[in-house]
Image 1 (cartoon, rainbow, N blue to C red):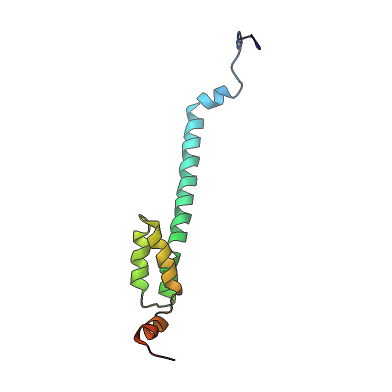
Image 2: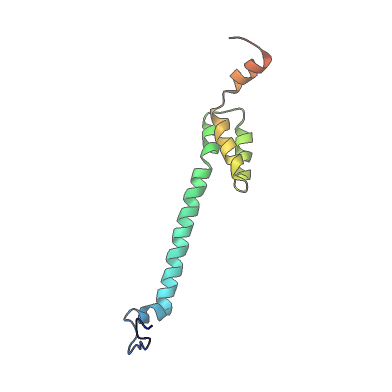
Length: 103
């Protein structure tokens, strides 16, 4: 049973084919792709370094730990999440709780 004939032939190429074949257009695509990729990576780096900046601003005692957690978080993401959580932890209260000191 035949639904469509299979003898399709094209007499001419699509009009955009000339543009896609040009070297200048391909270089334009490469440059735009690299620019967008660079912009995205820079924004991701900025977001990734937020815990470091917040820890430094607040002058937290665990600022160095947060810095290293952020750096190592580039390879292993849960470390970055722990670094974010370390910012909001009140270390004085935890030390008091561990020592059994009541306020």
